[in-house]
Length: 108
Image (cartoon, rainbow, N blue to C red; front, side, top):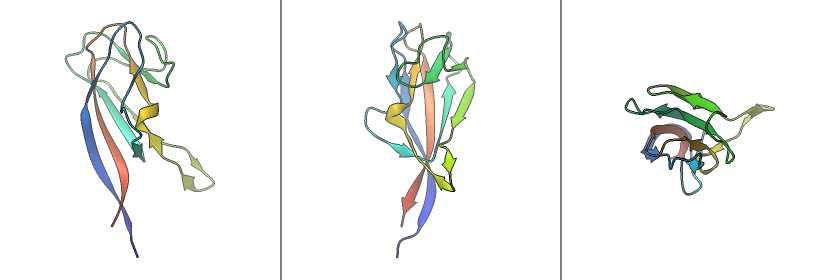
């Protein structure tokens, strides 16, 4: 019988394209129990975090060094998962960077 445990992963930095273009945290489906997003200390513009329509000035606003954590809802005792390909960042300025870590369930 397999058992489940959680493991912390880090993915490559994600950069904004500028002009308010929304960029996904992952190009492919990547399921997580929670995700932490930190705006790089060297960023000069704020980064918006949200869904596929996120734009500068909307969503969760991160200045340089700020971070946020996103967790899925717990409905009727069942915790869902977050798909990192459905979490987006946006900035008016190209080249702004976020660092991403996530917690995922691993079966052994």
